[in-house]
Amino acid sequence: MHKVAALAAVVTMSVGTLTACSGGDYCSELQNYAEAVKNADIKDSGAVDKIRTESGKLSKSAPDDLKDDWKVLKDFLDKAKDANGDQTKLAELAKNEGQKMATASEAIAKQAKDTCKVSIED
Image 1 (cartoon, one colour):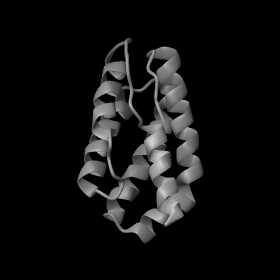
Image 2 (cartoon, helix red, strand yellow; image 1 turned 180 degrees about the vertical axis):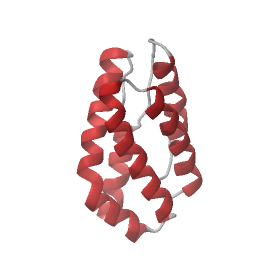
Image 3 (cartoon, rainbow, N blue to C red; image 1 turned 30 degrees about the vertical axis):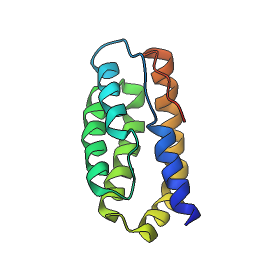
């Protein structure tokens, strides 16, 4: 159960509330992404699907240095969607890919703050 909580924390940390974006399509799309993830539950496959859609858009418009990080996030969300809310599968996903997801999330959050003037709140 703690692993599911850790997974939720990683997702929340990486996709928390974004504010005050400026700097083109990518930054504008970050705002849409923030709305998709606000209060999202990783066990809700509908919410995960919505987040996957927004992350797909961002992965296309992201700066080159973040494309790999968005791919990690999108792959993670694809697997979370496949888990279809199964807590055992989500816990295994967190165990296997949580660190990679956290690293990608940190890079995305740093760029959001530095370039888009977006603050990601935990």
